[in-house]
Image 1: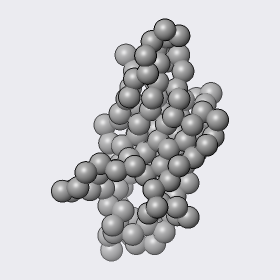
Image 2: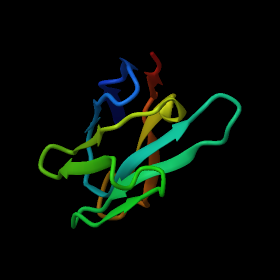
Image 3: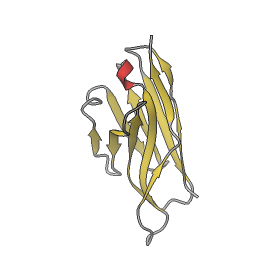
Image 4: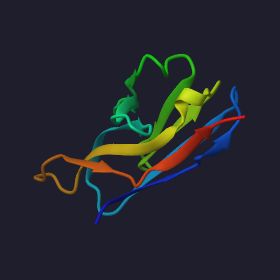
Length: 121
């Protein structure tokens, strides 16, 4: 059984920072990309940032210059450093990973349970 567990969400004032972490656990053979998505009330889930096993990153336009995604391949973890947070960043943030359980297994799109980030004064 594979699980993605997020941590680090909370309440922060505008202009503040938060760091989200996500750890993948279980019998994992390999992980391709890992990343973060978010969903605000009444809106669709959207990409925030992703990172491949080689360290190639992709950011949403709203995240560029403020957020940094990083990854530890040895520990199967991914983090999102968020700076200069604004009220429009308020959302539930979800960790995502494309992983395999074995060399012949197909890629599995796996999600964490989500962590709330609220930016408010």
